[in-house]
Image (cartoon, rainbow, N blue to C red):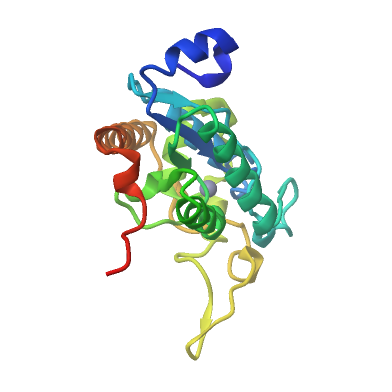
Length: 244
Ligand SMILES: [Zn+2]
């Protein structure tokens, strides 16, 4: 059950069973001319919502992430890495205060990774909580693009009305085939606008609702297995190894 749907008393009672917090995080940023700005948080929220695990409680979604590299495209919202890291860390600290000290961040946005890893290291070093950054594309085993066939498929499955399919061909034709820009060994693709005219990376025209359904199912199965793994381990066993 979602934490926010409880009353304070029913949540207190649920704490007998709850071992793991699940925090969906994403972004609100351009996803080419065919996908909604909500894509990353829509997907993260859906993966978390489909998890049906007695030992897990799902937290409210953080819908704005680290997206400064998409800022040239209208509608993109962003906070700094520091702000995002701190927001995640303090949110997890407040959950740990109620006794839930194992947390999975279900992440939908590549730009959040650095901040999530730093938050996780700090929480572990301080022995406040064990925070595991978990990216749905790793769970579904695919190489990340942007507004590509995988993300297009997921939004077609989750919210078909929000996909402007007429513009998928343009997204692909004026997009990039891989992420970033390298010149003589120097990685100089700082902003998406440096290497993709449409904002997309990958093959959005290959997206289908059926592929989206499969990706969601694979991701949720991996998340469920990871929550099992976390549940089986005492918190102390997840902390850093002692000196040797
Ligand atoms: Zn995305």
